[in-house]
Length: 133
Length: 176
Ligand code: FES
Image (cartoon, rainbow over all chains, first blue to last red; front, side, top):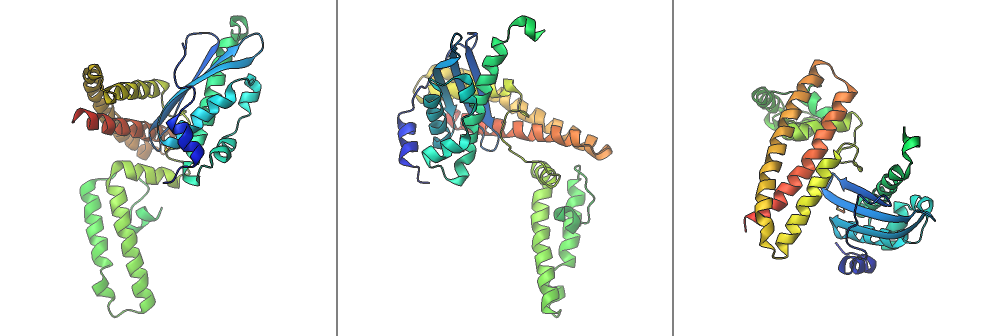
């Protein structure tokens, strides 16, 4: 299948590959998978607690080119956004930006799920213990 | 559920493979084209269609996994649906770690090999375990059909996919 230039670019030069300490209270980790293909994706954000702005994002994806490109693009978009803005990122925006064909839409859904999972993980950690009780 | 209907079966998840085969042979004989050689064209066409449905039905239902997928689909479940809800996070972690090890091996770091061999055994055991779980859940469903049981079955099916995928990759690397 022909990948778009943008997908190829992200695939060949993925941005922000790596990982952060998932025990860091300011780091949120999202680990998601797509059962239909067995692909897995880990996406992490590091949030500045004072401003609520995402200062760093990293990912590692074992999957198809579209999944790698989607998560690479996602980390680029995440940096500099507030957590709430990040929550608004839609897989359709990723589809448009990367010109993904219909059969590859689920790969972008995976990226959106990973963003949400990372944010939820961060929020869970950020909740003070008293409120939690 | 046409596949069940064409074989004259009730909506059960547990099927005996010998009985299933007998049903299939019996129905195949009934629908054999020779018996419709002199029939009206429309009747002949209908029999032909029924017989191709029968073949699909048998192929799908004789395998417990594809049978369960078919069953769940007709009960309104998506198989291989997005999200982690049905897959335990530990399994995803494990799959992820194993992929890391595979990548190291691909890049020529042979120290990952023993870890992979262990992992393969572990995942092969997980696969066998999920097959047992399916057998038990099939029985539970047939005894008293419940949405909750079907949901559990879907969970096992989803887990199975990750496991199979990984086993294939790991075996590929270990064998060369
Ligand atoms: S094919 Fe599975 S994530 Fe793209």
